[in-house]
Image 1 (cartoon, rainbow, N blue to C red):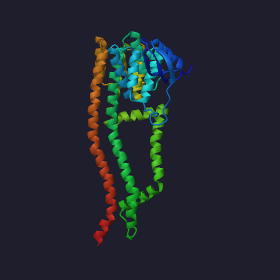
Image 2: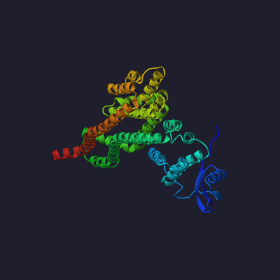
Image 3: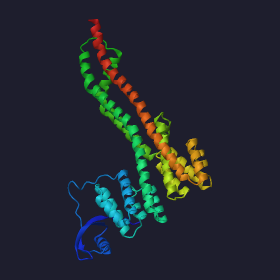
Image 4: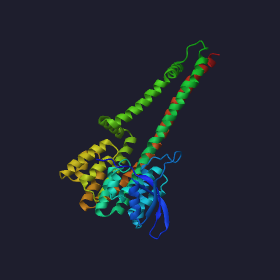
Length: 406
């Protein structure tokens, strides 16, 4: 398959149908294509040249985030709802975006659409920004003639999934930040503070208390091998992340372990169920067949345990098994969820029931995050108090002992 040339920005000047001189900027894969697009718009191009890229400052492009794609989807859906043609909507949304990288992406998709590709084909050329779920839903919307409605559903879906991700990150950020601060404080004490006390204690001429001696020895080891300690810690974290990306067995182990953790495991389980229900609801509402939808649903769960279970459900459903029965066979879904799906299947309103399940579990995640924070805060503070307090007491024990002798 031939590689598609990336669209560049061209600056042009020309005459419109009324003979008025106009100018502007348009993205395209070549000067000839840009001129052809302008002629189709009723503009006779007089000048057209590639826009030079800035050497400083503006040449840096911000990273495109899921939030950028969400806002783009909502803006595009709103414009189409207002009767703005698709190509013109891309032009308006692209020009108005502050992120230069996102602006190039939108205008590049616009150029592909203008060149005769449908929207799905244009989006599939950017898999990092528009995943398979996004492209599949857009394709379903184009085939059914309800692209505007699908874009609204996509925007709503992405807003809710990003909100859920933010809650999970908030649950993990606080303990991670406190632990990082604790490591920094203990490192400073070990490297700079305890050695000062150690020099003072060397003149005592008496045996140090066991706790003090342990801290002095630990400090000496830390000062000598701090580079190895931090190297091992960093290497362990990096190694686990790399193994999780490359090894299915490690992914299974880590994801299963996370689900078994107290409190945090409950949060992650509820988040996976919420993603499952929200994604399946969106796919159902778009008219995607159930078997096809399960592939996208599996990828959206965010946990390999639920991914494997969903793919197993897909195989069962393809042989005629009902969704509720396939969900029950996994042993991962609570009875309430299965009963809601069963009611949806019987009443023909499964997307509505899945939406209610997703709403319920998203709220459950919110409450679980608050509970997790409430539990972790005193636990972490207690842990820090014991560690740092133990170091302080250990350093002052010889002074107290000397005072009692005097």
